[in-house]
View 1 (cartoon, each protein chain N blue to C red):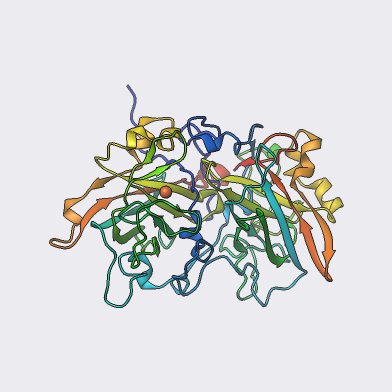
View 2: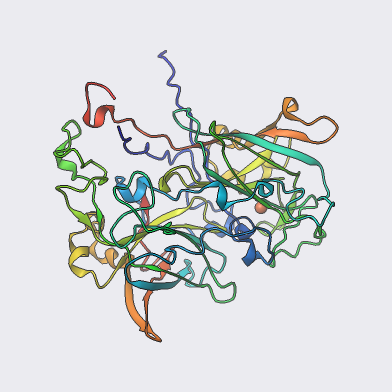
Length: 241
Length: 230
Ligand SMILES: [Fe+3]
């Protein structure tokens, strides 16, 4: 039996479009209300990726851009977790993409001119597919904090940008993963676009000593929750689904 | 006290930031890392239907182009079938229907090549009530079947992210040469303000013998594009 719509997105959990302390949002936020659309086949479907779209090395940011035998500089970490839906079910075989600054807080991007140096062995992006249990991991270096132009003295906490697909275009999500214990999290106007402390806490990866590789890499756990989906019970089969 | 519902809560969105290209289109950020980047070829070589190009610009509330935006596109093939197991029918080999589009950093202009999608089955109208089963076995509430209900006009779903956009913006692109279908489209007709509907309609033109639709997106202010909460 096929499944029905995805649960309504909880707009009180997400940042609103207009968040004046994050200045760029002021001129890039719609003023009219969003029009609520009941999902059709155009919304409940979405792109499907396979293992031939990516390579096994793609999730290893320490090595996926390094010259032969070398590796990226910085605190070696593993970021791992599960992609789940709001029903608590794993989301298997879905594409997870990540990008970040290097250990000095510098991005490999034409537009980033921060004075910390580029690491010749670090690209700063990776991608992977979740396994059949919704599990994923990246090997990388811990990104550095960096300054950005908002107020004159704003610093981004260490973070990894994460992009996830799910099975439908309505589940599409981009977010950021922060790290336990970082004092900059509480100061960041981008973090504070999120209206609830509980929502902010859900973006902070926990130090996970059980998942470290001793004498090699420290680990952080970061689970991602995508929108859940109604079953067809109330939709068309009252006798059960 | 009552029992606790054990649903999880969706992970909150955060802006894609100014360096979204590093993660999703590293070639544009200025480096080559993957065997292949995703989302450059929307329709593939075997897709039937009319080959078209769509171009535009995203404009902010000051009237200036947004030069660091990234748009993802999602569409059916010329037969109205999505490359997804829940869409009834088959697509051509190599047709994914999904694309990633980035702007020129100097001008903010973007464009992509694809095939024009066909009409897609609409969901059942609201009035039929939640407890009545669909009339036909091959037919369901979300438009996944092939019997007995209306079409949506040809359209492409768009998802827009950038620095300053806290959560991706969803909109739809329709085609101005589909006047009759557009007039009956249940989504366009959901927009109470008639004068806002044209913000979703791309204008057909031609350049060097090629069909080019123009679709500018206004994030804010006069002529603001209609965005959806899906
Ligand atoms: Fe960043």
